[in-house]
Structure formats: C-alpha cells, structure tokens
Image 1 (tube, helix red, strand yellow):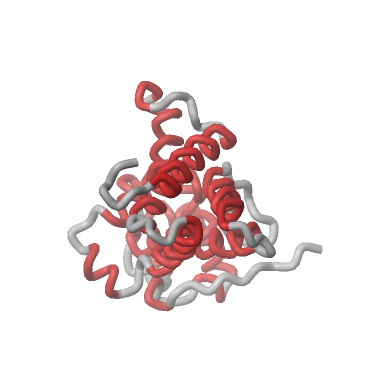
Image 2 (cartoon, one colour):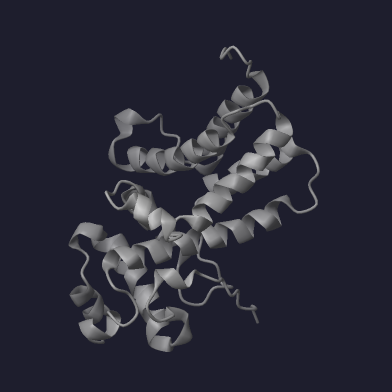
Length: 229
C-alpha cells in the first residue's frame, strides 16, 4: 500500500480547502484534466461543474475564480517539486552534483505520483507548460505577489539558487539563471511540440537536461566580474 503524501498549500489560495472533501478533491482532479484539454481561455466553472457532476455555485465555495484555481495548482506543483528536490539531493555534498540532480528533476517528463491521490502531476505539468506564464504576465502580479501567490515557486528558485552560489559564491545572477532555466524548460517543450523551428528537438528529457546543465555550469564556473564569460 502506497502512503499518501500530504502537501500544505497556503490558505490564501482557496475559500474552502479542496483537500478536505471528496468533492473538493474531484474538483482539483477534473480541473487539471479540463485545463489540459481546453486551456484557461475556454475553461469555465460551468464546464468544470459538468465534469464534476456538481453545480457551478458549489465550485465557487472552493475557489473565487478560475485564476485562483490555476494559482492553487501552480503552487501545488512547486510544493510537490520541492518535496521531490529534497529526495533528489539528500546526502549529496558536491554542489555541482546537486545542481545536475536538480536540473535532471526539473527536466524530466513528470509521471503521475501514486503517493498523491487526487491530482495527476503529469497532466499538471502539461497544463503549466502552456499556462504557467499567465500567472506572471498580469496587471495584478504585484498584488498577487504580496498575497503570497508565488511563495512556493520563489522558494523553489531560491533553493536552487543556493546551490549555484555553492559552486561560485561570486556569481551575482543565481535567481535570474534558475528562473530563466525553469521557464525555458516549459518553452522548449512547447516549441518542440508546436513550433519546432524554434527548437532543436530537445524535448527528450536527456537532451533538455544536457542542454540546460551545460549552459548553466559553464555560465556559473566561468563568470568574471567584468561581465565576460
């Protein structure tokens, strides 16, 4: 029997905790599947209500809008990834090896985690490949940031940035490098699938891992204060 993983998500990201009821868990599960099928623009709570066999008003008891639901799923993903990161780098002392393991983790095609009962992480990765940037590119981003909507993502970036600084304490762009790698990973998967002329068929996990590891380790190790690499 697989033990169930309990991930803690900020109370600011829901009206009623969706993990507290079978219906709430179904809303999360069907929400991921529907977002993956039709995208955020076409997604409505009316359509989600049909998928979950409930009413639209019931869904509004859990989330105030589809954007709040997306933020919940965004934070869930990075909370789950943070948990996976700790497993990947546990007992590794060498920071270069830790960075390689971390990039391996964020480069992989995610499979559904049997230790989580109600969200398919593989489908959620596909959702965020398309929708993740929409959480940032918003006129309300500063307000949402103050509300803690990006807390888990920033924490994940910060942990990887710490590894970068272990390799080269003089490197001044650790957060920029890590956040750029994460967003570029989503973009390259999308480009390879839909706009192949913008990629070099690097969507295979091992190619993504190699590309971003080589780029990052070269940049980190060879940085000079005059800005030359």
